[in-house]
Image (cartoon, rainbow, N blue to C red; front, side, top):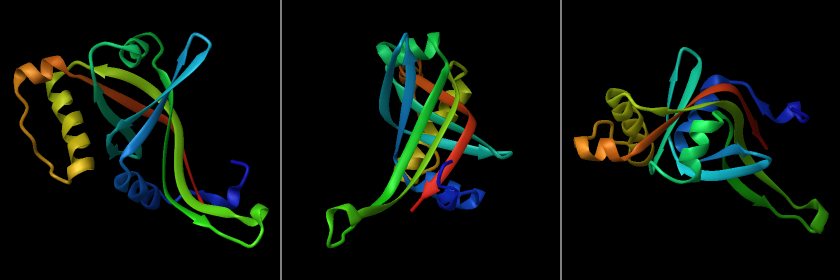
Length: 155
């Protein structure tokens, strides 16, 4: 990180940020193109390891790329506030962001699908337990990113 003075290394502070945000942007490599898609997410943080979950259709570009090129980048940002000044070049902003890379996989195991969907619902609603019918579980694609690298920055 070029601005090491802005790097956040405190694990609790990073997780607090990840816990309060709602949108994860996932970057796929698509045969020379980069495809970035914003998704709602949930996460688990166990044994110093992040796993991000999101869901979608069992069709389309995101679904196909998850099967063909599993290494992805991701980004979460928030806490944005414009810092005004007298001169245009002196304007700035405060923010916080997390970026990283990981391996994406489709979750097939029904129990893990439920875990993934529950983490997503917890992130958006703060409710921990949900019920899902079998037809719905069969129809939805649940994606999991096992994080390899993660860094956090704030100003």
